[in-house]
Amino acid sequence: MPMPRAPIFRLPLLPAAMLLLVVASFCVAKTEVAELRISYTNSDPAFTKVLKRYSEQYDQNVNFEWLDQTDLRSRLLRASHAGELPHALIAAEDVLGVQQSIKFDEVPAGFALTESSDAQVFSLTKKAIRLTRGNQLVLYFNKSLTPKAPENWEALLNERPADQQDIELIGWSLLDMYWLIPFITSFNSQAELTPKEIIVSPHTFSAMSYVWSMIKQGVVKIDCGYTCYSDKFKSGKLVYTINGTWLYQEYKRALGENLGVALLPSLKNKPMRSYYSYMVTAR
Image (tube, rainbow, N blue to C red; front, side, top):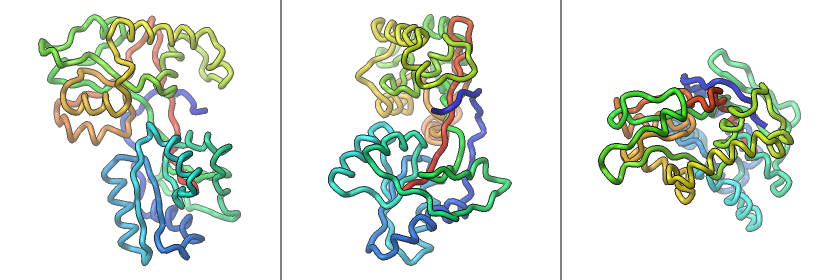
């Protein structure tokens, strides 16, 4: 389970050489295949350039496939059933939760990485190598639609979108637990929450009730998920959105100087604490 911490806005940069080392090391045992298939979920263009450099630098045919984090698990389960899993996967660490259905290989014994002063995290787990730490959720807003972000949900919900009928107030990935946890932390003052506390806690019920009230009021729509709301925000049809720091560069390209970033609004006079996770590579 990821741990709560205050959001940070300086995005972790993954040194190209280190990423190439990680990918290359995992692919050594697979070099007998005609084509290496590596799937990844990071949408940062700089990350994509690093992968392209790898395929150009090594004498190995490599097919890199980007997968949407939203349906990653279902895609992997279908691929596993069809015997078409990629040789390596670079994704958020919570993907390891499907290992009961997909048997990830253990990291080879004796595998070692040299720590770099530029690298935030390069620790090993049994099933994967942790690459970077981050992925906090933050509040993005469009400065052309609102001058600044509100400090609390009460103020945010009292706002009205611009006069245009096609402008919505806020949206996020409603059906993803990762987006619900910050609401739970506002109702629970504990520094950390165990999985059991999250599932059976009355604080979870309070958080879900609060979110459900926004759905009933039409503030957010349950049939518009991660990609839907992200596209609306990039096209200037959404005032606020809650999403991860991993999308900062993408939103910056879409909105330019109109992009604003802020802490998640407080709820009932309590701060919302975003959780963080690791990007890992597994096979």
